[in-house]
Amino acid sequence: MKFNICAAKPEDCKDIARMIMELAVYEKMPDQVKISYKELEKDGFGPNPFYQCLVAEVPEEHKSKDGHTKVGYALFFYTYSTWKGRTVYMEDLYVMPEYRGKGMGKALMATVAKVAKEQHCVRLQFSVLDWNKPSLDFYLSKGAEDLTAKEGWHFLRFHGIALDNLAQEAP
Amino acid sequence: MANFILRKAEPKDVSDILRLIKELAKFEEMEDQVILTEKDLLEDGFGDHPFYHCIVAEVPKQDQSVDGHMIIGFAMYYFTYDPWIGKLLYLEDFYVMKEFRGFGIGSEILKKLSQTAVRTRCSSMHFIVAEWNKSSIEFYKRRGASDLSLEEGWRLFKIDKQNLLKMTDEE
Image (cartoon, rainbow over all chains, first blue to last red; front, top):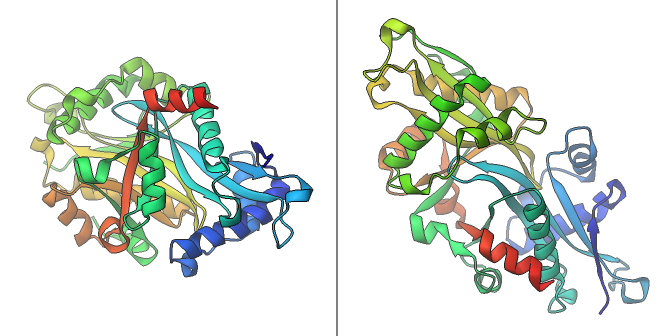
């Protein structure tokens, strides 16, 4: 099946928001999605973009049963490793179930890798849920290493009230 | 001794920042993994497109370290994006020299970072910690941090330059 990978435009944000929700449902956390396409537009296409996004598009004759031609996306941004320097963090990678197995996931990730290479980034990082075997298998086949297993890294966060409390903490 | 200031890092600080990065890497038992140079830090932090932001902790000359240093702590951070909740502050490195611990410097740095996060309308402050680093994990949990790797099963992955290039060649 023919498809195209290109940089997302502001008008793609509704489709991206739709697919973000589909991915959140798959990851069993749909109630955690708090932002809409409006925030995506503001945060990705303003004077100071907080992320970059690629979209996988199919021609009209291959549109989804719900009528969509934007059928996959990769959302990423630049980060910094004090050991290695510039890195890319791939926050989301998703292809709609009916379009899997056609090379779109691989093409999206390869395009992120291409951008990383152009920006002299030395590494691509991302996170995967421990039960997500199809994704784990896909990434491991591309040479990914599980740093949580290998080096014991855990993700922590200060969120919501915990963040507010920390900001107000007396010295 | 509790006389210290926190300020934004300046280009002249890169030598001290690299010294502290290496000290922290040594503590994390990964000193040989630091390939970053002062030139990289200068270009990547103080050029046209900063990849990171940095705060340093400075003591007066009379309180300098046994090795004669006045920059005795730092925190490096940048902004990332969560498609579910929007902008985040990501804390990449956070370190206070051993002889200056126990004076509240670490707590002040964390407070300043969380204030920055709230001021820039970030929903959350994220970071990673090695699971064997019990003292750091306790420090963060005491202040309200949650461990997303334990609670939700997130695992950190990387794909290094060699495999990234392989992916771009395959397309």
